Each structure stands twice: as C-alpha cells, then as structure tokens.
Image 1 (cartoon, rainbow, N blue to C red):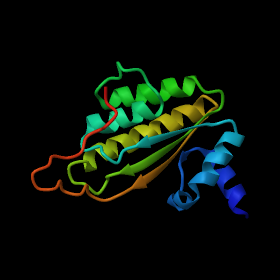
Image 2: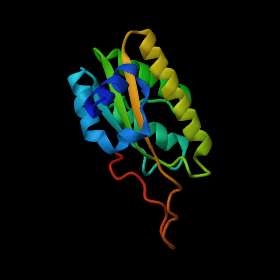
Image 3: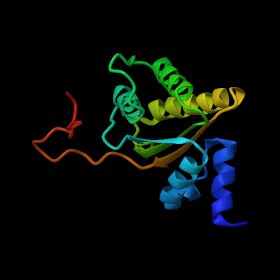
Image 4: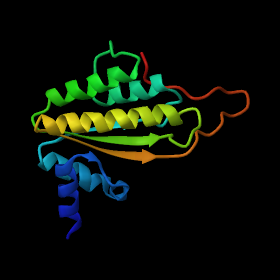
Length: 154
C-alpha cells in the first residue's frame, strides 16, 4: 500500500493518527484538505499547565475569547468547531510536553477529550483526526529569568 493511501485511510478512520505520520505532516495536511477537512495546528510548546494547554487549542481553532478554563470547555470547543466544518477537521498538536511531571495528568485529560470528540464526530458522520507530537519535559528556565510566556497575548 502506498504512503498516500495509508494517509487517506488514516484520515477517513479519524481519531488519533499513528505517530509515524509525524514525518509526513505536510502530506497529511494536503490529504486532509483534499478530503474536505479543515486543518488546525495547536502549538503547545510553551504550555506549562492545563489553562495554557486549553488556550493553545482555543487559539488553534480561533475559538472566542470567552473560552472556559476547564476540560469540559475543551470538549465544547472541539464539538462547536466540528459543527462549523462540512466534513470535519485534522488537528495537529505540536510539542505537547507529556514527559513533564507537572503536565502528565493534564495531558492525559486532553488526550481523553480528543478521543471523546473524535467519537462524537464519527457518530455525527464527520471526522476529527488528530496527530500528537509528544515531547519530554520543559527545559528549566535560565537563572534569573522566568519561563517564557506567550508573546502574542493581548
């Protein structure tokens, strides 16, 4: 089976995509668009707590400012974003620090919600596919400097 058909089949199935596709992200995005899926990227590289993870997802899908501060709000966000899409969407989750002890529980909650949203989409006859790039711990801040925050927060 060719790489292209592997990608297409994975997208049609929805849910969490195989980690092997991380190396083919550009092809994955193109295939998603051909299938009528919107493509969103959540940059979680700077997230150090659940609130920051939630903001990264809300920003990725251009969700309104009044986004809630709990895990239920993330599920609402993902479902409402699905409702706005004809076929569904692909969500690329960049650099989620699942190896960070302070984030481990929060990352697991987020992954559960992503799975639940994908199942909801399937029942609705649409697709939510997501690819998660897990990384280790955050680097410790340099002495005398706090952790770097988001630079584009208003």
